[in-house]
Length: 293
Image 1 (cartoon, helix red, strand yellow):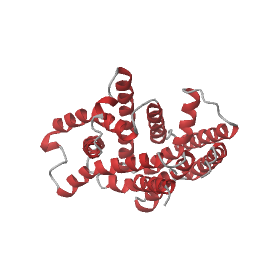
Image 2 (spheres, one colour; image 1 turned 180 degrees about the horizontal axis):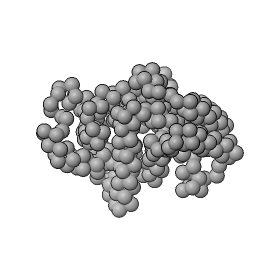
Image 3 (cartoon, helix red, strand yellow; image 1 turned 90 degrees about the vertical axis):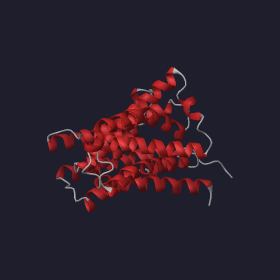
Image 4 (cartoon, rainbow, N blue to C red; image 1 turned 30 degrees about the vertical axis):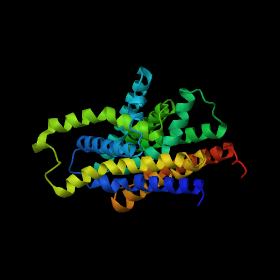
């Protein structure tokens, strides 16, 4: 199999894990989302640290945080990804996985908007149309439900800003993510110590404790697979494959978690899908042709 083919398989694997992860976090509904987030942070730090140690790249970790600019970027990225993780856990636990799926559907369009506002990137007509359709879908949901889909918008925005921070980060994906969770780990540990053995969920039930530990590998593995794919696969291909994630989330929400789809969701989602189709078509047209072999 070619390296590009291996990259596609790795990306599919990452998206399947992300897309099915609502089932996992639903099993932890009895644990407050902030506590789940703390465990997710600590155990993912342990997994990432082990990976770097096995790769003999642990010395790259302090280098990723060396200098004021690198430290500030890592801290900002850590805040964004932590907020994104918390919102995702919260949305699953309170039965709003559909909104989570919507957030990851509109993320590419939010990223386009961030690129225009922050990086002054020029938008083509198709991109402008796609962003406009996404705005229409959000407006329909807001008017129909009587409240803005803040979970969807927050998930898309935090992940979009996180991507912007990563764009400015010199360290590689695995090293930079490890540096970010390293900054968050002391806060997570302090929170769990503050909860104490009586209030905290860990240690009282073997199954629940195992699930909290498994939040680490469940976080680390798809990010490692994504990093592997990004080095071997065209970004246009990655952009298309990543839609598998919210599609699986949507399927899990409806078919397994039995969440209700309102008429307004039924109108808004097809509009988003059309917008993504236009965006993907425009991205594929602009993507460079592969070099001859």
